[in-house]
Image 1 (cartoon, helix red, strand yellow):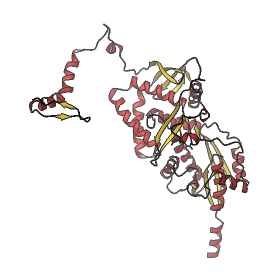
Image 2 (cartoon, rainbow, N blue to C red):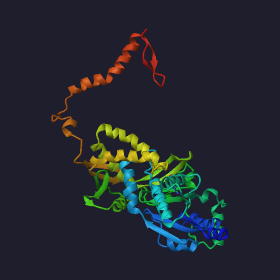
Image 3 (cartoon, rainbow, N blue to C red):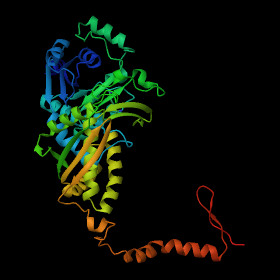
Image 4 (cartoon, rainbow, N blue to C red):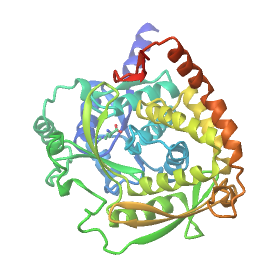
Length: 427
Ligand code: ARG
């Protein structure tokens, strides 16, 4: 009986679900994992709208040694459940980055967990390096969704020290890898934006060369005539362009193309990575930038002062959490519940002009507009009671008036943060 059991245990192979892009790293990973763990490999690739060819990917994965290859079209889910959430939250990391890669990772983590569960695989693997953010996002996401899964990150601990060593291994094992000249950049692309790293971009004194950019024109080559675009929102979600209802993928694709023509959405920034490194990042996100601007403009019109101000703090917090890979967490859910409840009035239309890298607001309209021209006007039509301001200012200023009086009567001296005298001593 014992012998028989041993025999059965031996025969059971590990099953590993690999997040697969078809590039050199993940191709080598398929073979390397199958040998090292004597495992059956199942690859999964999520299509989030990257331009890269996905057509021959299944064949390639199988040739590399995978037993099964999933290629899943996740564009709609990506925009609906990830990009629109980020948009409603006004998510922009450290003021500039619309978090394209960062919102893709939790969806890919979810995809890996679902396939692992379906295939009864106990292990999942990804091709992220040990110094980036994506390893954190994948693994924290996977842990949050299924704590029984073991995660392997071969790039953190395999023997290959260079790309050449990986190519040697690929050649030796007849792994089909693309022979085209490799771009000097590491590029991650989805519908919400493109992230470009490595090569000369690591030198922060040098401007990004033109060949780094994938989807936007430079300002010299950008269209010499402006375009206008009207975007309609329903409860914070973009639903129509020029009054015509469009699908989520259509809207983002359209604005990426149009914005790209006008050189909109190029970002070159130094950012704080999760692991503490400062890195220089170049991004292109024309569609995201246009939508974030339009959405923000509509919120300015429709949210009351306190909600608008409070939401700015939530927005920063949500952005940091998305960046840090904390998508599937209770706090994130709670913050998003707040965001959603603010969006019930974010309905209306914003008309923009796009020109030479600029996004200019031309008009705003909303049934929930809080703008009241009679209150705002400086003409005779004014209905605002100017006298109300007097008492209001007295009340607001009262604490400071009290302080000033105290210091003056007691001949005290106080300086501000810059060392300048605020209340002067009277001799
Ligand atoms: N710094 C960005 C982020 O953390 C982009 C990472 C892009 N990854 C890549 N493989 N190029 O979201």
